[in-house]
Image (cartoon, rainbow, N blue to C red; front, side, top):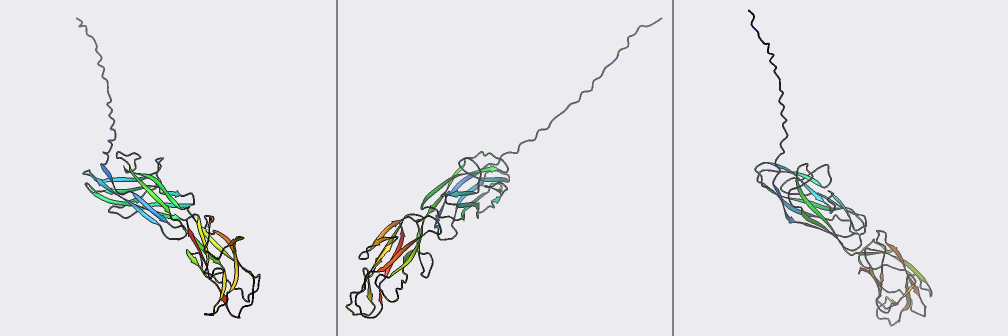
Length: 303
């Protein structure tokens, strides 16, 4: 007897189960930026050759219960980070660097970006210094540069907090200086007196000196004669009327009987300009022997 049967083939299938673990984004730091002093003012003398600096100060506060590394970024109005700015179109360069504070702002490879670490719940006052690192004869006036200061999680290019507006005020002070070529001394401000020696007086004799002037604005040149245009004998008590003389400034006659002034505009350079001042003995009558002199006071001041 035969028994029918069926052969059943049992199929099994192997399934592979794959899982992908996605990196979990670190929670952003909750750090705020609070202003303390948001304006750096540089009062700049183009002829002083002295260090000019000021700073802005602000406060960073970590509201998290974890340590946070953050970047402090200085941005121009086009949102480009920077640590140098040119002002006044005269070659003056101001550099911004990390200043003193309760936390260290360490410079990074990106100009205008500094990194610091804040402990949980901590608050730290920090600063950025603005310093003139390249001089120039800036025309007198006030120049203002606006920036934004941002705090970001370290290495990121965006921020969750509002930017802090800060500004650099560059005040080029009005300055005018003069040196009389041939006299002892260098450029200076205020009055200047030089010796012009005629030797033995002769009618028509001429002597010329040069006023070397420089300024970053218009300047007032004032010339006055103590004896109102006359060389007087040095001997006291004499009744001699003295020797009349005249003066020319760049071929312009100067009235020595009163204070004379002229507004000039020297080039805004360190070398400035050299302008001739000529003194002439007009005539020579009979006078007793002796020394005759006068004092010409020359003054240059910024307008």
